[in-house]
Image 1 (cartoon, rainbow, N blue to C red):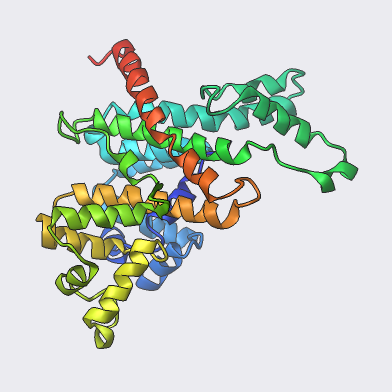
Image 2 (cartoon, rainbow, N blue to C red):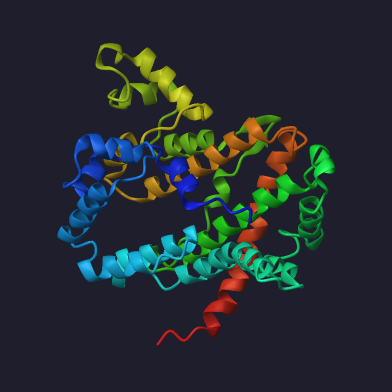
Length: 347
């Protein structure tokens, strides 16, 4: 219910990129087949076997582990993805990630449970849909009830269907709530320094002197500040121009490309971002984490700005205002994580 599925998240974060990375992971899979996979085509049985052989030979998973994972698929996209992450990371999987994982799987499970209960003829099947564990501020009871009323309209009334007025806010809040849970889980893991502050809120869209500052603009401003570059022209001169055709690789074209990135019109490729990290940050992973967050938030903002105004958000300012609630969810999860962690048996 309102949770972005893993395949949509993957599109926002990857969008057919990392071809060289996929080639390294799946050497048994032909180039043309990998391209089809990146385009979203379902693999054939022959391709599935090639993927299986590649993963096993690379020792990402043993044959038995991969078979057990495939057999244990539940049909719940996030549940299966999290299980796969645990098996793939093995002993490197941080136990703190379970905090966010439990929240995600609980949200995902309610719709499956409610549908199954209805199919089984349970008279009170509706009650299952309220067990998301989300606070009332994120998923109001009145909103869920309005959805049920909408679903039960007579066929003649369905042409007049109007989604509940708070649908946009509920959709966005749910995903920001989950993102904050992931951030707090990550912050408390052994993958980050002990003194690492929360930082995702820095890339939330906001207004500066009545001008929209989108996630990618904030990312590039922060990047330029860290490497002491004061203008786009200077950044264009210092970046390698392999993101555009070599015959067009002059400073003017590079500058235009950077402006397209900053405006969020096109994403900076991961491979190019890795090069930026290598050039300016000695290959550190911090800039990559920041870029991943900014890219996801930019893609989400673009999608809602394009398709949700004025249908479920009145205007851009209402959309930005809902994004700006994110710090409140950081505070919420910091407290909830402490309670969750204190109740865990870490031995």
